[in-house]
Length: 287
Image (tube, rainbow, N blue to C red; front, side, top):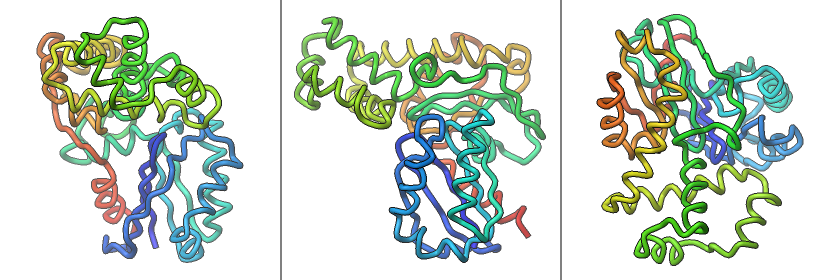
């Protein structure tokens, strides 16, 4: 059994297939396994809590894991060791989520492209057709992650509390969420995955894109992401497309295209959920 895994900070999708790509189990979903945020103990607890994973762990021969927080060596190694301990008969591969986005968005295995992730978090890399090149190391959601779900959640909360929202949007936002200050601070500072908590507010933007305020907020975040991340590859984007993966990118396609036109880069493909493309890639390469 081959497990192909796509993990963000919020959720983690597991698909079990055989070597011919036939799905063996219903898609499994657990909480996100971001090793830059979660402890090894917490990761092991999430794995053990999943009945389908626990029941089938001894039949797994390969695990291909792509996840947020796996871009640097220490958290990647910690997660790999936890997975190897749980799936004791499997060969485990752990790569950053950008590689999942690469395999899911490129048009052929050797296509060069700049590939971006806009989901709970955000990232951007250049794939030369063989290797991934990253010019900015992520320092996590508190400092980086422009145009991500958690970035927009933070901006919405700030605008709400600083009284920068139009009144109709402010009322709608207050009606939809518990915006009590103590409740917000409890979730941000005393609960796990504060980035995922912030990212939940991005849904409000998707549902209220008829508001000029919301559209401008979206475009402002995308422009910031483009200037800080995409334009790190000024020479590359002259000749290659910029692909996007993740739910934020998928729902904000119009705004991304508008910013791309302004900053002069070519938008390529959008993929909301990279995992389907990953399954095809790994069943073709694992023989």
